Length: 548
Image (tube, rainbow, N blue to C red; front, side, top):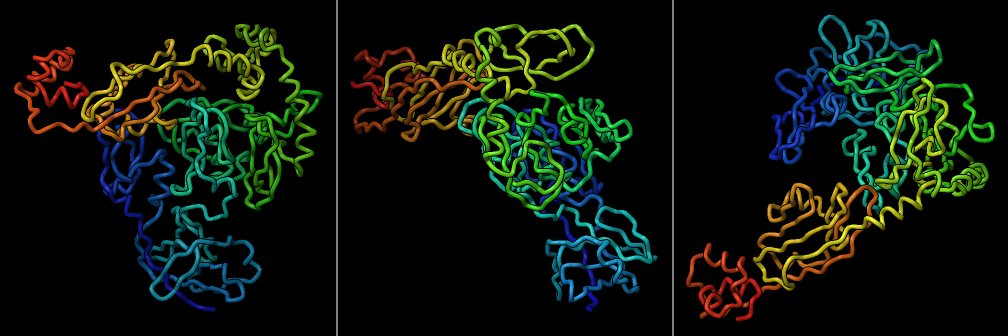
């Protein structure tokens, strides 16, 4: 047995940085830690630049900067570490810990250093008068050992939460969620619409339950919490009294894990009632992969409704949903018939129907295929009547109507053209046009790679308001490549156009007699081919690719 002294904890350096809105003009709600008030505050971020004192949610800010903690220790505390259980540390105020109580307190697993001792995961604050507080500011009972609670969850992450971001190989833009190991939080990302790894969730709450702050919580037994901000977002919660899922208005920050993006998501996790689906069974094959709130890594199989194949994933060992099988064969036997059923739908007839809400009074979230835009949209179904263009999920809808979606994408495929002659001289301007059939959004690509970063950060690249025109100013040889564009959701890339930029050698005797502005006007007017004007602006015309 060994007695040690706790030292103070320190906030990460990023929390001490000043608020910076950045250089751009977007209006994005973010949070920063205010050193003066010791609280996380809302601010409007411009969309680029800034510093690391910026968080997507108030929970991320509080967790990272330890808002509930206290960075100073006013009094000496004693930790008793039992050598026969080195991973269990208990905090006490001069009293021995009863052996019968050892199992009541949680192990910790992340190291914290002292000058002459290194233990694991201990964050504790004390004040004069014998009161002891944990890392979240909760007062403990004076004469009992303290349950050590870290400011960041320390339980092992399932394997899927440690995978990197995978946006997929397509060209759509769909907001999805993943767990970020660097930020220790669930973050949104733009998913292209096909192909992804297991670190992929359709809602922030689903990510938090599998990997984040809610993964160790019995969320279904909690009361509803609307949060502390001022938005009005429609969410669902489980009422353990009535054992039903109900809608509520979420404020946008704070709250607890009893929060779901849809009624179906709530019911899948919390209700024990059997919902009748195909063949009198739950339609488990359409459920989202759910690792459950526990953290014992168990390899299982689930049916991926995006790609209609069975895949491996890491199950946490408890709860989750019915889309979980011990073997690939069990998964395929259960879910392959459903896949074949969707393929058998007459898409030309069903998917071209307009959506019908029906005549009853229920509010069910359904999906229909919008043939005018080539993808599936959500609508509220009343519970009766309607037509066959109605699906339980976006994935099911896109699977059934994929032939029409592909046809729409091909019929509305963008085309790209370059204005003027190629090759161009270095330093000239290249103008590219994308014909989009009126579809939005428009994205630009070079050698098959999206130019999103360059568009945001390179002032030489200018995009028109509707995205159909791209200018490359002051061109360089490195700008040479195959350029293409795509328009609309889940769009197909246009055929590429080749741009070649060459550095042209100009002889010493070839000089401009006119000033820079005059010579630029001569180029713009296409007068360099005229011998008189070509000689008058020899250098500028030559550098622009004209042979004099």
